[in-house]
Length: 441
Ligand code: GLC
Image 1 (spheres, rainbow, N blue to C red):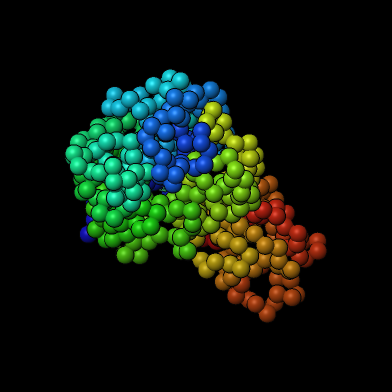
Image 2: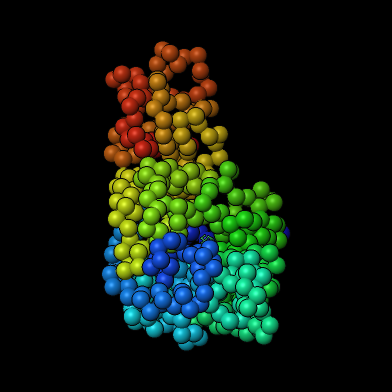
């Protein structure tokens, strides 16, 4: 008898497993120092020094409709915005602290505008919520693993009431689940050491989440982090194990399965450069080709890609990020059918690239040819099983081949991408040439 949590998460994540591609957005006060979202911790910055940015934050160029239109053009089907990161700065008009965007010169409820803009584009909406809060006086300071004042004996923890902090944290989550309409994802971040599970009152928290928005899907970081996944990988996941795992800055070698061998819903969260939050000096941008191939790899392993943008202090997504996402979107416009509602093909990975399979129709496979082939493209073990082949982007016919130099390999199916030259070089699309394969009944 499967654990009911597994059955429920399978039902809740169906849309997620079909969406496959989302936008992560890390934005907040840290965009002003522009040295990444951990700047307060890394530089052991005092509360007072960090307030400088609070007093300066204007978000003068913030237009989430532009963000939403870019996400749509890129082919992204959901988005996750940092409502509050570890620094404790709240992008929504919370009643539980003054450390919020509506009290800065920006004077706006940035979360509400984001939700309205992305919903208007038909994009599902998620919020990232840091369960760590370096601003809150009842959160552990001195001796914590990463608090900005962790080395300051003056920041001792006498008088800090962690239960009072949890009341605050749960209260903020209740606000977001009550006052902002239907949310699709809550992305909690992150547990560490003994700060995990019931330390956060996770059972009560998830009971509240499920009672307020039962359809909502939640990541696994009430128990885990990017380092370990928690009980979501077991046959009996806890009530707060989450609905999906979220490996970070990497793609799991074989996707993610639980101890029963069944796939667990998962998304790799990955940055476009090397930083989540805006970092002015970081120009190490991944190419559109790399992004497309990361996405294909995730889907081929039954997972999603949550690709991050880090807007600058004014609210502009960096032009380099925009250009990459526009290029990705052009490829997705031609080939998105091989990504959305697709997943693991249950075939040996071919030498020339990867397969994805339509989750709704097992007869439909997609060959993602990433490397030119000197001769024919080989479909190992598929001899006699292929009904038809089409170049996905234009629907043009590709004929299976038994060319003279292939006759000694009867167990495989083959096709040429350049039939006139009986070769498969150069590739029609050097980034990823997608061939739709219809298998025989
Ligand atoms: C890590 C980082 C955090 C980032 C998150 C995204 O937890 O500490 O800054 O928001 O990864 O997955």
